[in-house]
Image 1 (cartoon, one colour):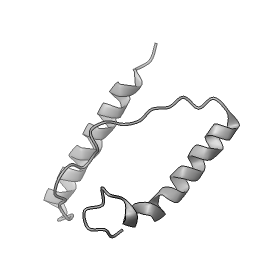
Image 2: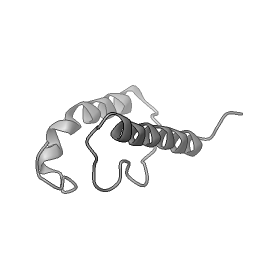
Image 3: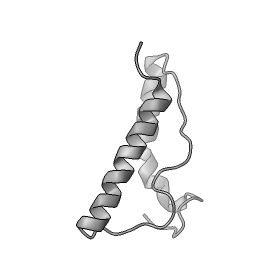
Image 4: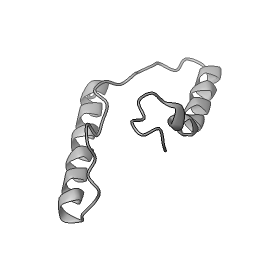
Length: 77
């Protein structure tokens, strides 16, 4: 059996956070305040083509809604 999804997500977040920290230190990348990753994640089993298409549309359109997102601290993209 393979690695459970939470283990993969945790590994990915750890590796990308470490790389980000290296780049801020070694290559003067801009530092962010707060967390790099949200604490949890949402997993969903896609069971149909209709569901897959709806998720794809959500992912594609989501960045355009960032300005109105209550979690956007500056209200800007």
